Image 1 (cartoon, rainbow over the protein chains, first blue to last red):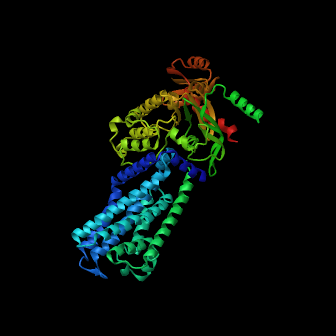
Image 2 (cartoon, rainbow over the protein chains, first blue to last red; image 1 turned 135 degrees about the vertical axis):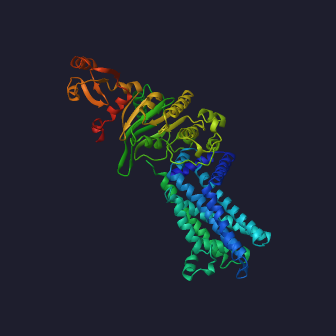
Image 3 (cartoon, one colour; image 1 turned 45 degrees about the horizontal axis):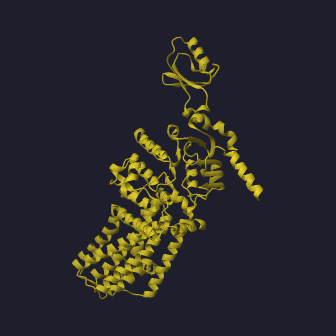
Amino acid sequence: MNNTIRNFEQMENSRSFVHRSRIYLKETKYEFLKNLRLRMYTVSVITFPLMFYILFGLVLNSNQTIGRVRVPAYLLVTYATFGVIGASLFGTAAGLASDRGLGWLEVKRASPMPPFAYFAAKIAVSMLFSVTVVALLIILGFAFGGVRMPALNVAELLAILGLGSLPFSAMGLAIGYFSGPNSAPATINLIYLPLSFCSGLWVPFMFLPKFLRQIGLALPPYHLSELALGTVGAGVGSITRHWEVLVAFTLICLGIARIGFQRDQGKLYG
Amino acid sequence: MTAIQTSIATSASTTHVTSPAAVARLRSVGKNYGSVRALRGIDFEVHAGELVALLGPNGAGKTTIVKLLLGLIQPDAGRVSVFGRDPIHPDNRMRTGAMLQVGRVPETLRVREHIDLFSSYYNHPLPLARTLACAGLEKIADRKFGDLSGGQRQRVLFSLALCGDPDLIFLDEPTVGLDVEARRAIWDEIRNIVAHGKTVLLTTHYLQEADALADRIAVINQGTIIQQGTPAEIKSLTSGKFIRCVTSIPIREISQLAGVSEVKQDREAVEIRACEAESVLRELLRRDPNLSGLEVTAAGLEEAFLALTKEDNLAPAAN
């Protein structure tokens, strides 16, 4: 196993830096185009958070406030977090499970593709779609919700949620390695939706029943949303603690994904 | 030390006097999937510039051999080498191309995009236009993969195996499930790459395909290579002829004639496999003056294949 990985690294080294960068760029470009043209991906990843935000943040409740923050600003952040998690999970897990289970990844592995280019492309594209969802929500909030934020805070929100896509891309890779090609989207929804609900991404956290809040405190999306809420002045809890949880969660997920990766190196499909 | 090396060299040269360099080689290779023994002691070589067909029924172990040679899986016993090295050596992937059986290919990418991406992995790929031409894809280069027919999809996968201008190309069941026309189109393209000096290992369960393309055929069944040779040699292994005719002689009576090895009814006619066709024919014509629709053909590759892969032929190897 380790031999295989060492060989991959050698292969990376046998190419010039320019050639290697070109492969990573092309892999990312085509991963982006592939997802952009995939209606199932764009609809579930972009349309749903926008729809929810328009309905609950702009049409209903728009005159109310949560603490000192107006609902359109508060829900802008939580639905943006919700969108980022969806873009990251669907952008990694669904494609990986299908590529693995139905032989496409094997075709790529038989080629001289640097294996990490495949994963890097999925992570980069997930981040790109994440930032896009957040940007679209900000535009909606500014245009129709009367949301006003200093430019610095807008940039901070985009940066936090862009980075925040990483833990969930890592989680997606782990799911992609341990679910079947056709069951992956269902598995993702089964994890994604309850996780989002319990973390207060649909209904603000403080309105959840107490036992759900206790679960939510342990969930990574809660910590990401609190970091993001900080940019509109609604975040609670220790910022360091939130980051620590997210970093630890990322490492655990990468560890699980790595087990799956190594298992696949010796696996056969008949 | 020197003496040992000399003796190895001698034994190697005596066993492969006529063979050019082996590009890919399996030595006593065994592979199990759980309790299933997929390969049992395979010895097999592919030499530079030849097109070898691995011919066998589904589940015989053909794909397993290809995956071993690609370094996608590891053998449980024996040794696998490609270009004289371990198959997972990074330089090998630069020099090989593979067309594998795939359940789903990203459907929203266009043909030219798929080729562009795979070409970028190689150090010295063919120009895009060349790859498109070699696989007959010029007219559909801008179509999305999901909009292609079965034959066109296979041609795209074929182009991905070619685009890096590799020396050794693996084609795993390249025409499975295609109609005759699409199959012949791919055959033409395979002949074309062999004419350009590439080495090709093809797996197939179509006898006709092996016969039409291969310089050499290895017949594989239940994880064992049961016969190797040129298509003509494989065919000659089953002597005998097929006799087909319409006759009133009962089948049971025919089967008792000397020289008849098998008889079966096929619609209105009977099909007789005979090792001495002449004497059988004489007897048939004597007993049934009204015999009609007579055809006599030499046993083809198909018959050879069926004879070779019959269960009872495997009994000694199965131990």
